Length: 501
Image (cartoon, rainbow, N blue to C red; front, side, top):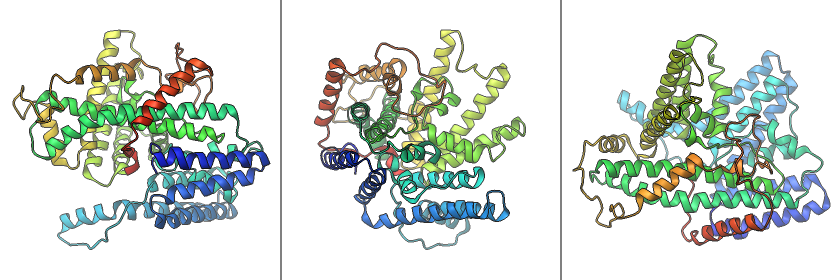
């Protein structure tokens, strides 16, 4: 069930909010938690009810395992073994559904041995709820955190605003909110703030991201049909997808945070103007922040981080990004995307070491230097998004060739339908988008007085600006206009790009 669909906005969400509001009058926390768990399972089952037992089974097994780990003792060998077994079990489940076919095909191609693998459908959200439960097992087993009661644990895993595409939350962030005596009491402030953030996210998705998708789909579709692109056309397609995935994922994150606010829950910040970054290192501190945090905490640091010398640090970075790319999808395009980001991160780190400053790429006094670093970062991102979007490596290579001017006459029109015709206002549209991502305050900054998301202290981007949201007629008109524009574009809702992961 898409957040940007009529059935969600006009049926599911009002029913859940109304039920929660009625239960809030009873001031019974347990009933409110149970209501949200039930609504979340209904939300998940709307996609395909036969996968509901998978989600329920994963929740039950990990809940029981967490209690078992604590009963064995945090520091005991048996406790550590139980924790490791649980992590392996979760990864095996994810590996079967997501990577069995990919491994069978590639091992067969390498060895000449044919493997028979059934047609496996990737269950919705399995990557996200698996990572959350792995983090829970690590916290319980390592830190001795008190195990949750079953209802709170089920809500932690299945909470529908963040179930499908994140943010990836830790139990210690949200479960104290569920356990609070005041949880379940809907407030007017929470509703107003939540709806505002939700509408901002909806506008980003259906108005900005889906418009960019038109140009991206045409360009990548042309390459797939073996239609050569000019340099201009290829870069239009690459930039269109760069903007599409930016506003698509930013919009989803806003909508998830806004929905959680309706029920008095604050999710962690997951998106902080990543295209303002002036280095790849800074980009990953701003893009999909909860995934970056998870990879840092549970992969980069256990591998040794930066504790074993510079060479090992660079190897660890490459390893983490290769696995991070593979997490996004079972395909060589994702592996190469992760490898490119790993290489860029390594180059970025070496450059910082040579210059003798950790902030040389993100804190220069010279405006010219900052501009150069920003352009280089954006170009690198556009290049890597090509292989992320491409259906296979052949399409990605042909697209890169077009971007480099190696295919097609330079001045030729591409499509008979004229979607890339030079008289179309593609340039002004992209300029507007560039100005938005570079200069406009993001949702976190606009809503800074309401603090709808959990954010670390000193987070970059929390700068003063004149567009701070405050309850009142002016903002009511602005949000109402954004809502009206968005609803008019919901006739054919498109899925969020991160749903496939």
